[in-house]
Amino acid sequence: MASFFEFFVKFSLLIVLLIGSTNAQLSPNFYSSSCKNLFPTVKSVVQSAISKEARMGASLLRLFFHDCFVNGCDGSVLLDDTSSFTGEKNAVPNRNSARGFDVIDNIKSAVEKACPGVVSCADVLAIAARDSVSILGGPSWQVKLGRRDARTTSQSAANNGIPAPTSNLNQLISRFNSLGLSTRDLVALTGGHTIGQARCTSFRARVYNETNIDASFARTRQGNCPRATGNGDNNLAPLDLQTPTSFDNNYFKNLINRRGLLHSDQQLFNGGSTDSIVRTYSNSPNTFTSDFIAAMIKMGDISPLTGSNGEIRKNCRRAN
Ligand code: HEM
Image (cartoon, rainbow, N blue to C red; front, top):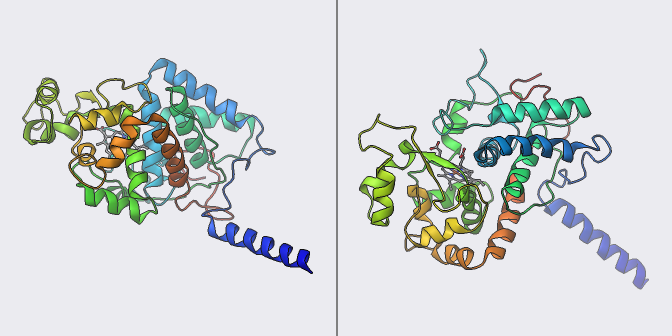
């Protein structure tokens, strides 16, 4: 009798866990029998792209973030505009900015060769983001898989879904919370700005007008970003001034020294509720690493298409 009771309790717990955990459909071994060489196939293309240009790792990580924040992680950011919809690529946060689409095409071709019609573009992007972080010296983790691809999207979804660099802390917190990501997830994920570059147009107002900024840092950035709008808009500066091609915790050290490049970056250390999290990550790379991994997995769980929803696109740029 006792053992039946024990079984009943354990069984019920299992059911609660399965129902309670978000997207129990996604799993790290989703393609383990249908596409055995998936991971090495993706990694070798990512590796060669990063060997050509280290920044590409940052661009691929950002693409995954932009995918997940717009209708969930469904590969929608990869769709070109068509006669029936205007997609995300020309939305304000992406135009002249989002990059790496050609690398995703190369990965997808290699994956299609190995396992035709099996692996979604949304999953390719999730794996490429993970590999990018680890190739640039950051952590690696088990990526959950089994997402399917959207057939359509919209430009306005991207304009509304991706936070602007002019956002204040409350706006950042509430956008992340609305997707099930905590304030701690916000700070950990924005640690992605330890790699990559931003355009003058994204940081001009900060380096000319703001007060919570190190004066000599502001002057340096002004040097390559003219004050007048329309001049040097696409000139680049590193998001992490120290090591923009290494995934480390220097981003948080910069914030403490008032050397965040974007207004939104410095909002995370501006006398508010997230200051203590920034201090924790700047003192403890291991805490940043484990929180970043957990938050990436959570972000990857945002409203995936599964089962018979969506499709497995052949070409990441268009629906089948
Ligand atoms: C908290 C809200 C965020 C805002 C407001 C924001 C904003 C931006 C902006 C304005 C840029 C520069 C774009 C340009 O000037 O062309 C950028 C670049 C970048 N962002 Fe974010 N971001 C945020 C969160 C994230 C997250 C969560 C990740 C990844 C986990 C991420 C990863 C990146 C990377 C890697 C780059 C550099 C891309 C490259 O060099 O091609 N960002 N972000």
